[in-house]
Length: 410
Ligand SMILES: *[C@@H]1O[C@H](CO)[C@@H](O)[C@H](O)[C@H]1NC(C)=O
Ligand SMILES: *[C@@H]1O[C@H](CO)[C@@H](O)[C@H](O)[C@H]1NC(C)=O
Ligand SMILES: *[C@@H]1O[C@H](CO)[C@@H](O)[C@H](O)[C@H]1NC(C)=O
Ligand SMILES: *[C@@H]1O[C@H](CO)[C@@H](O)[C@H](O)[C@H]1NC(C)=O
Ligand SMILES: *[C@@H]1O[C@H](CO)[C@@H](O)[C@H](O)[C@H]1NC(C)=O
Image (cartoon, rainbow, N blue to C red; front, side, top):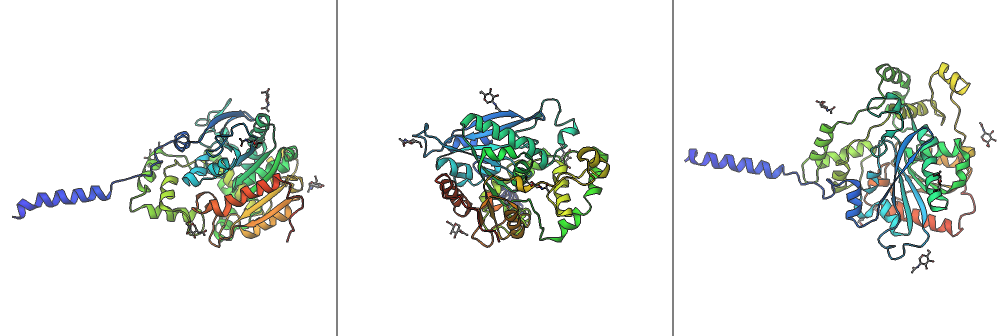
């Protein structure tokens, strides 16, 4: 009897394992960015610009939304979205139909999305090879701010003959305020900059990064010695496995969402498993080591200033032993700062001090949800009601001239 049933039992067990391990992924997980946008019925344009230092950059554009389809000729205010470190425009779309670009396009905006140098759609250079030449990776948020943002803004102004609204997330704002301090002419081309979770004046409320940052010099020496440009090279095997393990119906998907909570620095209460699985279907983005070192220097010195190359090199480059400070007094374009309670990178104090340092802050907005964190701005299910809705209201109020006074600083 047993010998008859044994094979059946084995078949049963194997079937059970196969069923429970059936990796059913998110319906958009296998689509590339263009396919995702087209599938949802939005128009997509892909543009290319060259920076003054010869990096080729892609710009994505959703010129109008679904609701606005009937009126393609109406004038739309251009909005430029600037992603953070280790990010790509893909991350702006992980909330599906509730995503920021669709939200803006459907409300009459012309949405442009920057792709910073080194990110997945901007990996070419006139002379350097991203795979072979370590010099390609010799940039921090300084170069993104001084070259990539101006190239994007010039291009948009040229195409639309209008000033641009800018929305940055995280490092996107660091770059934005580098631009507005170092290249003050560009303040003229920006209508209003909105900073989601700005990492400019940084107070870490976690001792570990502060401790690690103290040793930035040692990390830099090791990286320079080994001729490494990127922090961690992307690896297809690893990307494939995370995509598989984090797919929506697996046992691991909650683990993946929990991992995101670590990245977001506090438990995320607004990231669904569905969103988590889509996030992990996006291949890891390579980060230049200098982006990290520049942040470590800022955390260590407590000063928002240019890259520290060491005394000798600083003298040669800057004619001073310490790097020049970014002068936020120059950042005269109107600015609105959105920040969250549970954000260890862009802390409440850091955001409020940034507001104080800005000469023309028009809004101080703390997201009215006590558990909102750094990545909820893009990944949190309720971002549309808590963040995008007030963003659009601000743009419309601003266009209607309701903001001509500065915000009261604390
Ligand atoms: C189209 O948009 C323009 C500018 O926003 C507006 O003046 C015009 O009335 C709109 N047309 C229709 C049919 O809604
Ligand atoms: C602006 O557009 C004109 C005409 O298309 C072109 O010649 C010029 O190079 C453009 N400038 C920039 C900065 O894109
Ligand atoms: C990815 O990582 C695995 C495990 O460390 C390694 O065996 C493999 O060679 C790597 N693949 C690439 C393309 O670097
Ligand atoms: C910052 O810029 C303002 C205005 O451009 C100038 O008055 C001030 O001296 C500058 N501060 C520093 C430290 O360079
Ligand atoms: C988020 O949205 C859900 C569904 O609409 C709602 O039940 C919940 O109260 C919202 N949470 C916050 C913090 O807004």
